[in-house]
Amino acid sequence: MTPPLTDSHRLSLLRATGLFDHAGEESFDRLTRLALRVLGAHTATLTLVGEDRESCLSGAGGSGTTPAPRGLSRQVVEEDAPLVVEGVAAVPVRHPDGPVLGLFSAARSEPESRWTQQDVAVLSDLAAMATAEIALRLTAHELDADRTRMRAIVESALDAIVVMESSGAILEFNPAAELLFGYTRDQAIGRPLRDLLVPHAYRAAHTAAVARNVATGESSILDQRLRLPALRADGTEVPIELTVTRTEVGGAVTFIGFLRDLSAELALDAAEFRMQAVVSAAPMILFAFDRAGIITLSQGTGLATIGLEPDEAVGRSIFDFYADAPDAQVDLQRALR
Image (cartoon, rainbow, N blue to C red; front, top):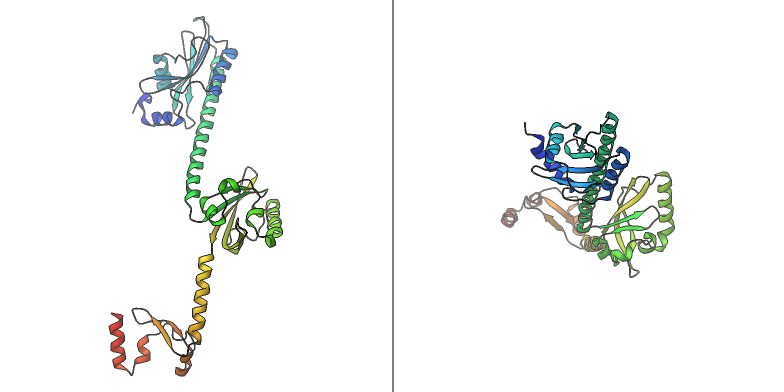
């Protein structure tokens, strides 16, 4: 078994705290000062123990930032238990996941001073408070990392993302939203979403829907794909597809909107509709088919002359219509190669 002092998992957790060689943290200094007052100690030290050296995270009294003696530090880490020797009491300081990161020690000016079990229990409580502070810092680091990752995702998203708090103010406005609506992020953050992005005809309904959802949690539009107009900075409207999700953390409600510009899609739909109208009215028969000869489009008023309705031939083989025309079949086969 690897000795605790050199255990790679323990050392990895120690590095992850970011506290080694990082003295001067007020939250830890308060604990060592408290140890002096409560325990009547001459010095109190919070020491982190690496593989081959120690780092004083906090010290009070005496020389202040001098780590605990190496031998004492090693013994506390390796035995994972409180230790009292020559007027010095020391207890393990743990990572929130359990491994010992170092020790909380206190010394009295009279080496013969006796440390009671209650004294050691108080010192252990202070060490537990140090562990709790380490846990808070690790959580803060994780939250910062999560925010950084989320920021990267939001900023690189191709769709516009707009986040709104329950009051209606905009909390987030990604680059795609800037491009779609013509506002910079700084211009949008903190502004009422309804005033910036909601056309006048929809504002009353928007306000009522948000208020109802915040009050009851009910909504008919959450997690649905909606098509509606939105307002640009220049006052023009843009057709969008909108999906809204609701989150609630600690009682704070936020809404996340994912918006996609439908302008190009609707323009293409309109062009296809016009083309369909032209083709359907043309006095001819128009077939389109795939490389296997299966008809994918069947239009034109000429279809009536062969007893077919528009699209009735879709799914059939083009060769069915040239069964009595072998030359035409040869031409079709050549075209499909």
